[in-house]
Length: 463
Ligand SMILES: *[C@@H]1O[C@H](CO)[C@@H](O)[C@H](O)[C@H]1NC(C)=O
Ligand SMILES: *[C@@H]1O[C@H](CO)[C@@H](O)[C@H](O)[C@H]1NC(C)=O
Ligand SMILES: *[C@@H]1O[C@H](CO)[C@@H](O)[C@H](O)[C@H]1NC(C)=O
View 1: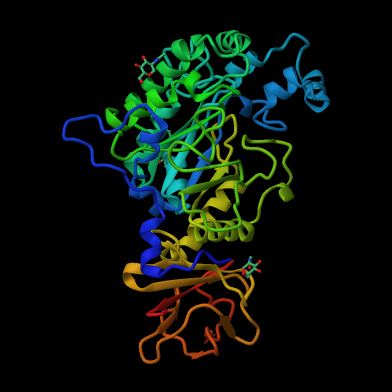
View 2 (view 1 turned 135 degrees about the vertical axis):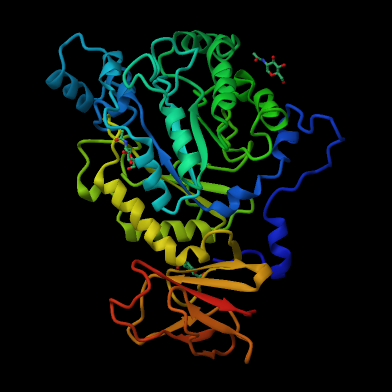
């Protein structure tokens, strides 16, 4: 896959939006309009981070059956599988809110989560502070008796994770927040007025967002769930202007694009476009592929079988493809109602970290290259560090011949150096006509390979 031909040095500055004008000293630089907000440059740390972990945890983790959309599927859609599950396992008058006290988080230890997050190689974490069910993982003043301090854990889960992540890891701390709530009476009332009334945003969503940002200072604010309402209903631009101008995280916070009907892939900070978004080509606007290790659910499911989870090979490939196309990967896990991270999720996270420990140089802080993948060798992906004149080629199939063909980069005799990350010794190469190189990989036994699941070549002084 090839991007429009530009000189390599010229390509990168064009990738990210630039501020259109310098703000006057002392003035609020951002106006509550998309034109102004969309022109805010994305804080640099986010593009460099490349890899984050998403955590879906809430009252849906109690039934932990089917999907985190459990409540909706059971009581609104009345999907037979969910209706039967409730009929078979709970008394007839059992309500979704009765799951609240059962959400005990008995074994939740934020330090253990922090340890796993650090080991995963992720540079940020995004926790669902509130999903569409409305239950807040912090003691929201606007979510009476439907929050983790009054009900269930009886602990401020957001605070505990925030402190552990900030104290014990080098990850940036982020929060997901669902704007709408499936069954909130004020939201339903506003909806019946075709969103002319704004009772729900005024009484619930906006106060909660201000509270969340002031109390926990998230550096990613991951909005979701517009409920079919326009951003003017949510007053998103007013809130974002405050977030960017005045909030305690104004300089470092990044946001996504889910701020009202029609905003996705168009307005806000970076683009998410769709769940599990894989554009298949380079995007010029910063984007993120949010996806789940469990192919069918974001929340934990007791009914998941081993083939429902993506393998580490699949996950590493998706990370590499995403980064080559200019995106970040936000990889989701769903903890259990007890607050534990299941062994499958923990293993995938630690495996990713083990791979990144050797190959992270080809991922973190890189930029897309002139080409995103090789035209000759399938499934070989490129990243680059233009300032250091470095190109990385990441591949997943070790050729039997030991010879790897790279059709795009051209070598400079006497100047080009090729190394395998984690191996060290320079490799020999020969130029191909009309372009490209053949690299002779070292002869290594399986025990000597620097990593499993994929390898990276570091090419210095290529053209
Ligand atoms: C929480 O986990 C940490 C790190 O694994 C451990 O040192 C600590 O003792 C645990 N705390 C509790 C209360 O179990
Ligand atoms: C919406 O945002 C504007 C700032 O642009 C603010 O003046 C107004 O009070 C906000 N409305 C609500 C309902 O919070
Ligand atoms: C890479 O590029 C080639 C040629 O541009 C294309 O045909 C191929 O499908 C691409 N993708 C992968 C995964 O190799």
